[in-house]
Amino acid sequence: MATMGPHVAAFRCILHVGAAALALSVAGGARADTLVLNPVQDASIFTGTPTSDSLAEGSGDYLWLSTTAEGLARRALLRFDLGAVPPGSVLRSARLVLYESRSRTDHPVAVHRLLASWTEGPANAGGSGTGVAASNGDVTWRLRSHPTLPWQQPGGDHLPNASATTLVGLPNQTYAWADAPGLVADVQQWVNAPADNHGWILIGDETNAQSAKRFESRNNAVAVNRPRLELVFDPPAPPAEGDVPLPLWALALLAATLGWRLQTRP
Image (cartoon, rainbow, N blue to C red):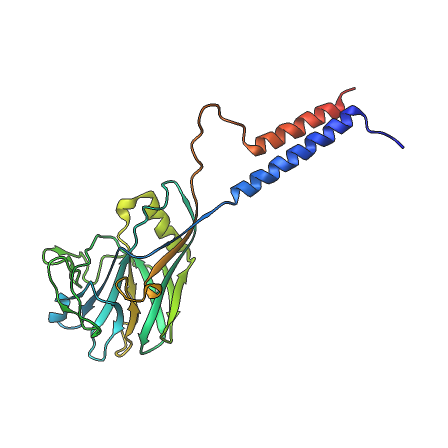
């Protein structure tokens, strides 16, 4: 039986080491962190009549959307604190989840990125869905913080194009706006520039009367039904200390080069 020469044996050994190093490098690059967040702010705003522009719902159990039988349109605002995501992280996915507890019709609900700050405020109309008179700090259709800070555009300053849209139908179940490129881009922008994080505004059917929807808010007694944002991201690599070791892919390349040189030696 033929035996391997020392050069061939060394070459094979180095190749095995290189392959293992490369595999470890690929596996190491697959690491991702997950995070589930509840909003730090949420509120509903109302319009439809001149007096309804000053109605608010900041601290109630519910978020309201779309249009009532009286023609009162409602929108919901949410903002999440992303401070737990390390700076320099790269988002893989973002999933916004809400629980719908009341519905009149099935229709798409769009999520738009807000462009200005707003405050939640103390207004609480219970389960009426019509709001109450705004107090100091409430957000309304015309004011991002009552009584002095206006929106540039009544109804909330937001990007015209939706970041994500999903069809919301029957009540008493959760709905998700999941992995839309715009949603991921919004969160990535907020991680990169936290001062830009003003949250989202949800807009439903504001054309047809009696299209109203109700979602559970962050103040709802049932914690599992509160809005949440589910994130998957790659955190930044930790900073090197002292001597910087070669990355595993470089060790694999070095091993292959040494093996080739050993193989070609006379």
